[in-house]
Structures are given as C-alpha cells and as structure tokens.
Image (cartoon, rainbow, N blue to C red; front, side):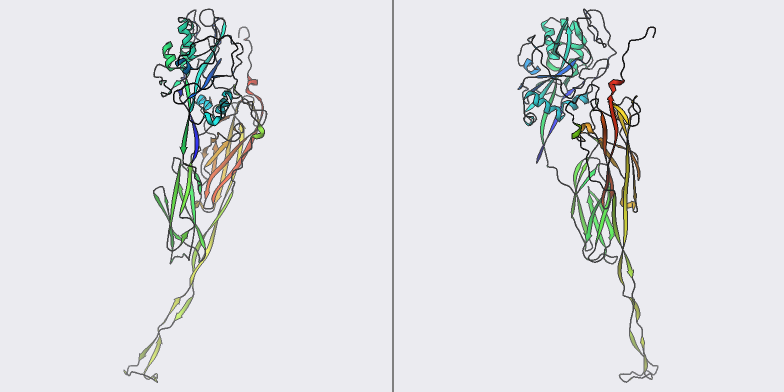
Length: 589
C-alpha cells in the first residue's frame, strides 16, 4: 500500500458585499481605501490596503497546543513596526497567555512565493481558492517546515496541524503596530474600546472575518454569524481570525498497473488477439467483452489455421475515475491472449493552476530545470482483418446403378446388353476449401499547436509579451482512417507550463471542434475579467522563451492510441508593471 498526504484547509474567506467604504470624522474609523487617515487624527490612525500578513503556528492535531514558535509571513517590508505582541498564537491566548506589548525588533519572513491577499476591502476581494491553494501547496508546506525547523514528513504525518491567523500592520496613534485579529480584540478590551473607535472597520470586521472555520476544529466553532457586520471582542476571541490546515494521512490502495489508461467520458477501443485452430464460416469464433455490467459480443471472427486475429470493441468510458477489469471469453474453439484486461480511468479536469497575482514572487525559479516532457508519441497505426473466401474444386463422385431390360431377366454374371445396363448417377461435389485474404487498414494523426499572446495584452504582439499577461492556445488535429468504425478521432489535449516545471498543474483543453478535424483551446478562465480562454503567465517569469507543452491523445485504434507531443513559444520581455503609469492630473482635466 502506498500512502499519500492530503492537505485540507478548513477556513472560509468572506467576500464582503457592502458598499464602498468612506472616510468619516473622528470616532467612526472606517477604512480609507486610498490609504488615508481613520478616526481621530487622520494622519495618526491609518491602515493601508494590502498591509497584511499571516501568522503560522504548528500545533498538535488533537488539542491544538503550539509546538513551534509562530512565524509571521508577509509580502512587505515591516522593519518600521514599533510595537507588537511577540510570537503568540491564538491557541496560546486561549490557554491563558497574557497580551504583552513588545517594543523589540519585530521579526517576519518575506516568502519566495507571495502570500495571496487575505483581507477583503472595498478595493477588492480576497480569493478563498487562492488562499486554500497557497497554504495546501506542497512547496509552501515544505517552506514552512524549514522556517520552523521541522522535518516535512514529520509535519505532514498526521500528528500536527497548521494554525493560521491574519495579521494587520497599522499606524495607531502615530505608532506602527502589528497585531492578529485576536490580539486586536484583546488590546481593545484592555484599552476600553479605543482601538475599535479608531480602526473599527479593520479591527472588528475586515480583519477577524477574513478567516474563520467552515467546520469545528481544535475546539474552535464554525462561524455562523453575520459576515458583513462588526463583531464584538468576545466573538472574535472565541471564533474568528483563524484557519486550520490539517494533514490527513490517507491510506489508499496501491496504484495498480493497468493494461490501458483511459480518460473519463471518452470513446475508446479495447483489443485482444484470438488464435487456436482455424476459424471460418463453418466453424466461427465469437469473442465477448464484459465491461461495467454490459456485454459486447463480436461474432464471425475468422483466421486461418495457425493464424490469429485482432479483435476489438469500441465503447464509452464512465464519467468517474475508477479502476476496472474487463473479462474476455471466447466461444467456437479459439482462445484469447488475455482472459481479463485492466484499465485505469482518470479525470484530467481537476488540477488547473492557481490564480497568479500581481505581487507573486518565486526567487528560486530555475528555467534550466523546466524540462519539456516527452510522452509516448504514435502517429500511425495499422491492423488487418482476415476475410475468408471459398476456393472451389469440383470433383465427380460416381454412383453406378444397374437397370435390367424389360424382359425382367435378372443377370447375376456375364451380363450383356441383352440383360440390362449400368448407369452412373453420380454428381459433382465441391471439394474446395476456405482461403483467407488479409484486408489491411490504417490510421494517421497530424496536429499543430499555436501559442499566441492574448489580445487583451495592450503592449504585446503575436510573439512577444510582458510577463503577467495571458496567452492563448489553438491546437488543430486531423486524423484519417480507412476503417472509421474501428477508430475514434482525437478527443483530449492537456497543456503544461514552465512555471510549474511542466508538472504539478495543468490545463485540460476544451474541444471546440469535434470529429476527425478537431480543434482544442483553453477552457474559459474564471480568473479572467473577460472570461477569456487564456492562461496568465506569472509576473515573476524571467525574460526569455516561454514554451507551453501540450499532449494530444485519445485517438484510439485497434492498434493502440495515437498521440502527439506539441510545443510552441512566445517571448517574455519585461513585465506588466511597466505598462502602469501614474501621473498628476492636469489642471482642468
């Protein structure tokens, strides 16, 4: 049995549905979306959108007790922080730790891969999918293990969980302060409500409601309250401002080697070879395939003595992943080379790349390690079918009979014409045999791939673009066959990308044109503002050649599957930030 680890993130991100926030006079404390002042003294109580982070603590999986010193991850330089509350987790406060202001050096980590947006504001919502994808990504988990000095396998072995807490970096009463949602609520209690008065929308709505549990865990309840209203201190301390990553070590059956690998919802061909004796129209052979409760019978399977015949069935795979066994039986005297066939049916439409954001970083990326794959490629197939035909050979078979004359004399010996006559009443008998002609068939596959820059990229041409913008793909595939009843057109294409070293994530292309002249493109990207068929390159992608690899497959024949490796490239030069220009408004403009 092999063991795989599944990472599950059990928090919910709230996407606010309130109207755009405004700056009010002293006491209201709503967020200034432009980074201006809040509450009393607009220059002394400030929070800038995006000035945030996440505190990560390794805790025991049963009780939630901290086993490592928490670490704070943030994308920005936070050397200006003057007051913080040390590295204390929510679980430690629950266990009785006191809130202790600390004026010493604030320590933090700028991870190589930027933390996604956590706190939703009027300038934009955070993405729950992006947050989950980030904190359950193996590379991120390995980085966290390294930061806290813990072995990766130990961390993810099932005995520990990660406790996540959103952090806000603010200017409070003119002092740069860092606090989690729990620390903000505790500090507000200690100051008689002053923090809520100065930064109310941040400390008692946006920050605590940015993360909470979908289901109860570690003694914390799932949040069932309002998601767009200010929350009192005691509810924040008890229920909000936390997420949990759990590592469930799931034991699954060892992956079984299979005779075939199929995709879900696909027309496929399964074949066996039959031999033994001679099969002809006088002694025919039939082959029966038992597939997922259905019976497929191929009758009139012919082949000469000491010969063999490929026998196949075309069928449609189910819509769910599974491992199946196909049983094969033969009647009429022959035998199949396999009495059972195994097949793995997989779904490729479930692992698209996470949404890249403008402040992503990947300082460890090495283009030299992005090696383009080379899957099995086959563009020609041939097979044959024995066709019996009868070779005639007519031979006379005599049948002599004696007929006496009309005198009624019976002749015993020395008979003459006077006694009667002999007559041959035989017949011609066809003593021919079955001959066999071999009808040959074939199929071919041809395809081309075009990678182009998305037309919404304002400074790109067909072959050169800045990183951070999107690319489009068109795959045109043509297959030809001399026996269409035995083959399928190409049905699947899947693309892989250099930023993931052509692993980890991929995009299953949508078949936009079916049949033997098929076309494939990216599926509509729900991260695209215009819902376009695009793949966004990461902002950190270095200048140079950006090559996308696509594997075209599922063109099935009795001789196996035809498939092709395809690549095409665009050039990266610069990044999208170069297209941004900020200038003062002209008078009267």
